[in-house]
Image (cartoon, rainbow, N blue to C red; front, side, top):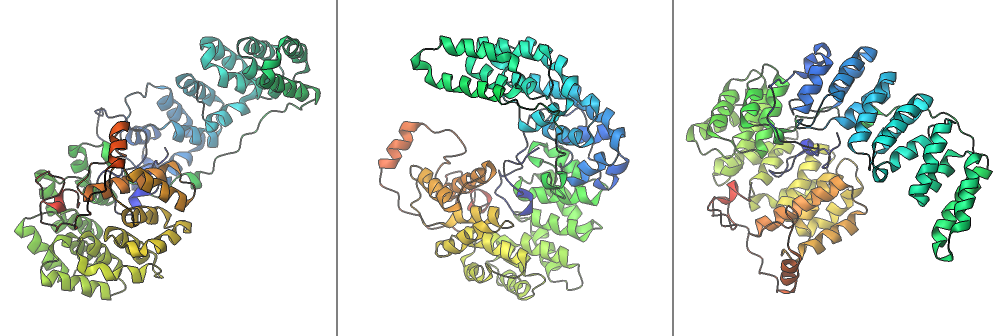
Length: 534
């Protein structure tokens, strides 16, 4: 689990922005896209396989449907976890641990030990908290694992043994061996274990140390102090993880791991939710000829208005006159569903040079119920005629209007409003959006050599960044470089000498933002709207 970029699905994103699941790109054995509406009736093992293949988003709908089955889910959870999962596209280890910690089955120890064996040098906290409550039951298996591992790899296993809350001569023997191999680590573990029987060995080692080993002496004295303090050793009762805080209510599949054929299969699904998610993913995915045909068909005929609207949005780059005419017809049809009309309006974002389209955007903007979608269409157009629409809504009472105002301020490059975006860093609901937009427009010299300094400036302004937030800022800065016709810095490792040379060179003159139909300054030969303006 775990998202390297928080809540990406909540807002429009640059093309390469995706969820932060650990990905292994392999071909799936089969394609199955379960309908979230039928999760409760789908076998747990099938749900897990679907999530591991990227065919289901990892959200509360999925997790709750599994946990609701209680002990009946355990066999499938362990079957899945104990199999060879090296071919999975999405790593579910953290999710399995969270579910097993919630259900607390005694059989889960085998899976936890498997996880430790795979990464013994860096056992995560959730795995430690999963194993410790097993107490005496875990002693033998952990000691066996300790013996199987190299001494260098076994430090975390020694820590687990020391903190099980169990007095056992086998544990003491193992930790004394640890002391012989790594005095610092062994002393720490013996202090944690708290058995006074370890005191003679620690005192003997202390007497043999030279004056130059003062730091190790302090560690040993501290451990001896712990033994003399008579530390109580009680079994650990691990807290159940708060699932509601760990997962979003809804999350789409990680589309970046799916093939085009799989996405199209999902778009053709009987489940409206799957069709909607697939259509929305084409905002950030190349629309092939095959996809174009299916999206257009769905836009015209899908029984669900939100799906039709998402399909129109996905066709924004279409130059097919029939598609453009259909969009205009939908936008102008007052009897059509508002979701579909709004989607078609966003789909027309590249046609604001047509007075009729620009007029429609202003009409939709004037209606509070459609204002947010109109503003999205405006900033997606990159058309400067709409620049003044965004600053006045940065503090709008409507949260979605406010969000679109933030994005519009960023993409229109309104550096004069950067201070107001910075104020949004304290808003939990808008922080990610504001960070991205601020990175796009904060006044700064833009060159590859200076962009790392800009990142540090943003980092200082935002306070401590989470790994996901740091990645989000870097993506925004790379996109900003691309809009100036420069290669990215953060998306690939750069040669240090090259960066140093660029730092000393005078900054290039800032080019004017190209028109949507002008050649992209990156030299690709594509139109700007289909390249770095996307």
